[in-house]
Image 1 (cartoon, helix red, strand yellow):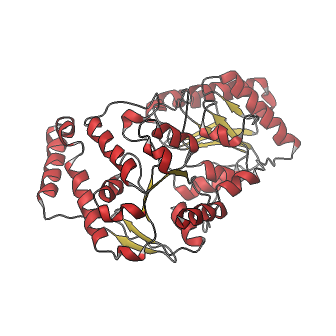
Image 2 (cartoon, one colour):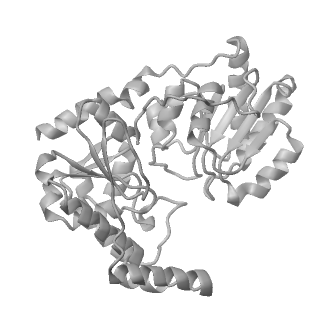
Image 3 (cartoon, helix red, strand yellow):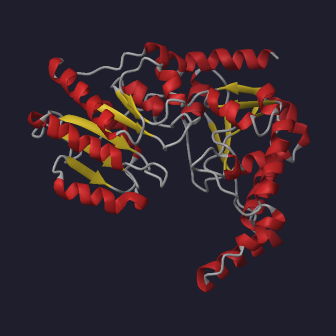
Amino acid sequence: MALIKNLAAIGYSITVLHYTQKDIQLKGIKCISIKEKKINILYVLSRTQRIIQRYFKVNLAKYLEPIFGFSFTFFNDVNSIKSALKKQDIGKFDLVLTLSKGASFRPHYALNKLKNLHEKWLAYVHDPFPMSCYPPPYQWNEPGYKRKERFFRSVSERAKYAAFPSGLLKDWVGSFFPNFIKTGMIIPHQSYEEKLTNLETPIYFDNLKFNILHAGNLMKQRNPEDLLKGFKLFLENKPEAKNNTKLLLLGNASYHENLINDYAMSLPQLYIKLTNVPFKEVYWLQNQVAVNIILEANSEISPFLPGKFPHCVAANKPILHLGPDNSETMRLLGDDYNYHSEIDHFEKIAKCLEKLYDLWLDNNGHLKLNRSDLEIYLGKGHLKDMIIDLLKE
């Protein structure tokens, strides 16, 4: 959304075709909701597959996707997107940009089948695809992964341009699909100021405390155990901090829920809300707390630029980065950045928290990240320069 809004903010006329099945209106941007095609055999097959799975608990995907590569729902969605694109006057567009989420990439599949758009196609690759191309510990061979790999190789060869949110991700995905190295550019996740209105202060937040926030999904690979051990050790080493410190964990954490609940029972300084939290609430908190945490998987490399990284930079609060040295976050923060630890080094995590707490006290509760270079890199001015260079070609 921030990328779309920033493209409009720097002066481009934007038309968004979206498959959310929602009525979405953005100021100054033409939004077209793509309707799902329902009178066809793919729609019937997709609903039949869902019914069988729901009522008979039989997952046909593991039998069908090795043959077809994708689900019937996927193919019907792709055809719906293609149909909507064919209704557009493509000649009036200078660039056709495909965005997606998760492991969907439906718009990319649709564009891949429309040869007349390939010379204007900018394929945005937010994550590796398929899961077999992820770095450890995320990677696994899903049903039909070979067909999925062939599809993405085709994207790499047919799209005139490709864009990645990080340099490390471009290199990583390019190691599987080398043409991305030639066509790829870096368009980082964008910083975009959200205007918050009628938002009440959450009842669990006390702005007089040393507040440390982790907001986001704690997936299976993002284990918070050593963060919690490090936080507990920090309080033991700094007993004076027990009455004015709070660690906030917000977001789904189904794999780690028992662990977190066990710590919460003995740590009154730990506040947990292990469910989805509205974006506006999280965005407000990121700007109010003393420290924001970015927690990544225990791995040798993390090529991802976390989606919340621009929000944390814009909040201008120190970032406690817990993840590998070889990560996009550390590449941007710099080798000399002080508040960083591997995810499983709880003693180092405690030391980082102690340093931040002492600074918080010394600065009367006001800590700053002060990284104008990152604000520029993630902002619309840098985006404008990149798009101008692209369109010159």
